[in-house]
Image (cartoon, rainbow, N blue to C red):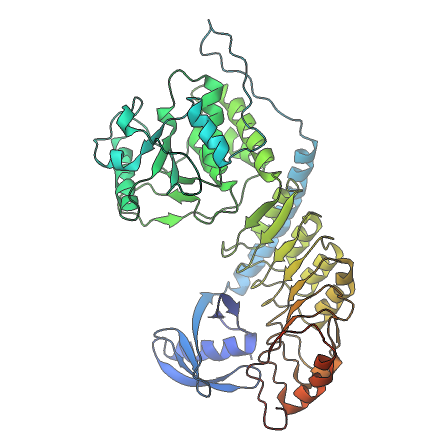
Length: 528
């Protein structure tokens, strides 16, 4: 059966990609009637489901269980070939940029000379706890930042905010109970429509909160030094505790800096809101961080009112990038960002600077073998959790991962990819080197049944294992389980009674097992 023109997924706690056979069946029925309902035989043991495309749901006729469905467009063969060609060029360019980045010298931007009669010593722009709530609070206490109350802005004509009265200022401490902290970018006095846009955003936010705090870089205290203001601006836009509202999509050098600083906070899914029109839909921008050389290339094409700003902005971004990406116990979550192999190459450059990364989540994207081959060599040794579920990683990609497994890995999720028995066997030969691995998820993989031998007995630390929907069938007889297993998922594997009878002796030796899931395996009385 040919490949489906759409990628089909079903949902439980998260979204999972359907295998090619079920996707083709759904696609054929969907193309006949995108709003209709019909019975379809799906799954490894071809259960009968009532599928209703008008609400995108499927109901198991036997159990009554309902699952949500969704359909994503698949790139055409011509487009895929074009992408692969462009990717090869991107890989070559990325390797060149990475070499330049590795050899780059630390840069300290020159001191602005706006006040010729004052001898200002450059203050540190960032400290050890860069971007933390304590650091943001310190920028307020020092006078470098004035925070405004959203409730005050909502009641005022927004014309000149450089000198805010005392009642306009946010007085509460910054802690985890602070309702919301917003950094506003792109506000200009000569463009009153942006003030109106800001007021609309404030009004929308106040429908959800009684009040919240805003940082506008136009409201820094006048007595603060130039470098104190710049340092505070960098921290507020790059901090994971703030949300950035960008009021423009046509970037000048300083607003470009602020946007890229916001993208550094890769552990926040609602970090950057870009909107430039009152009638525009409000959507969160999801982008990868830019490495400094790439940032510099784009920056060099912009117009500068003061030529020295080019070097200052370069230095500010490079210093912030190194502090954020080198942060202790850093984690990144890019799940559902729509990343493809081009983005994987870009992310590989970022990972060169992330040697303290402990968690990397790339689930629900479109990364294939080419992207995985670029990413795998750059995975830092500090990594403890890696989630690549619901991508398109095949045998070549998972083999590349097997060669570069982080030694401290504790959790690995590769469910809903395209690699089969060959790639999995390569991975299982290397996994015993991860002595701390406790969780392994390998669900919804096209492993097949014939001749498959899954020897997981060498994974002595694995306590949680998922092999749901991998078409084991009676091949479960060749399954060797980890000795310290506590949780096992074997749902929808078409085991039948023979499979369960073969599995029973293996389970009897698992003295630590406390959770077993065998849903939808077509058991009869003999198996039970």
